[in-house]
Image (cartoon, rainbow, N blue to C red; front, side, top):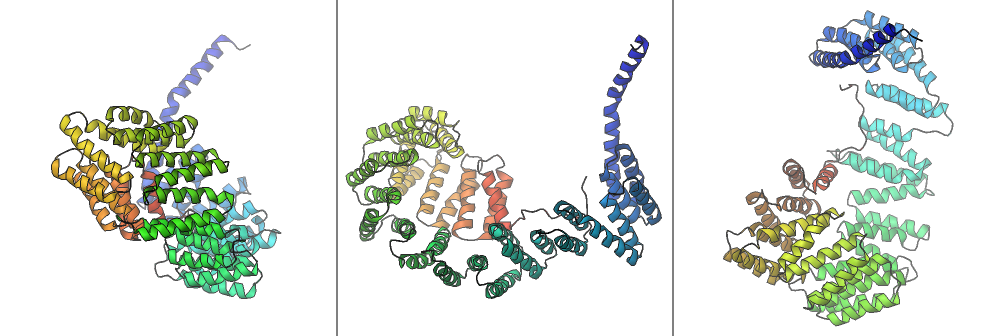
Length: 619
């Protein structure tokens, strides 16, 4: 048992260590900052002294690397070589030290000795996939790209059934050696077609930085060469189809997709996917060409009715994209949807009947027929709960459209009750609150909206917060409430797709209440309507008035993100979109749309997903 005196001394010693340890750590941190400051200012001899002290105190290879660099940069080669040799004697397996030694030989002009040292390291270390990648990364950090390439190639020779095509491609990309990079990617796809999406994503990102468009011709010619030599491997043709789409050569893409579809008897699968992609990119003529080829396979093709559904949705959007839709076009669309729904398989009847009900209720003044269709499909099919809820919500919308707000409220309430744990339940509650807002029940609507502000759906929570704030700011006085009543009526017209009437009411609010708090809301609504009708320049003008004249308001971020979306997705003006998203990130850092703006900006700039190693280590 230890003596009491020794026990007390031991405890005091621990307390002293604990007391002064933070001071020691702070001192070392200060020294670290000073060392890096010397290093950045090219005062390498001073930096070397401190880096050595830090390395000896912490035994951290991070400081060791900077110590060696400081010696080398101050031409203290002998000291650097001695230090490295001593360190290697203590740890002969440290590859980083071996590379530092070879590098010192090279800097001293002993090329033969350096080359042998590098060669020995590569031959010794390329024994496992991890050791190959680690060694190559060490060379990349020193910008020794040829040695990194040798490492990967030697690793492929030494390790059976192992390739480093992906790593080689990335290495060539760093050096902008596009011809070798693309060959490496093609080798990778030839051995493992599952990398197709990853290669496509990588090439898409690289293409954003290819200012002189030198990469695309290489990709195309390389793929054509591969197809000629490997006609039986479809991955290269798939890749070429993708490349044609990226460069806007849709006719060539259709030609190859059709050939591949027939060769593998896919019954329109590849053509359908290409048409689907073209439709998503709003290349509707191209999509129609693809779908026409799908239709040639007949209704036995599993993609026939899927193609019809996409085409009918496009025709619906086209027919309804105006204040006064063409009634003949809508009648023809109704017949086409109805005929297709009768012939379609059960799994596609739901979206087709839903589309048909929307046409009948909102554009052909046939609400009773629409409601009957909804009831019929609900009885015929055992729909998933979410699909049934969406149909019920549409039914509530039709009741509201048909001046039957009481039945609409009951339907929304039922959906809300049956879907309490699902986002669609929150959506039903929001529509119920919005119905109350439409009909002037502002106090009750606000109470419901305040509950929804805590919704798990950020979009619903944001919409609820905006409408709640709109009501609270504009319903406290009679004059304010009168303006809000008009504004709510304009919103109801917009819901009913009566955009002309909505714009007239909004203009009357501007004329009757020019200094009202609602002005930014009015401008924003006018922007929404014009955007919905495809009047994008007018929409941008209204949104810009919100951003410029009402920058403090709750709608400023909404307006700015919508401007960015229009430039990005509708007008294809990348430069304007980048400027808009950049402005958004600077001005609305706490907005719900911040992630969207950031991701869109990255997509437009083509930021790399993979980090490119450098030879400099940051503190």
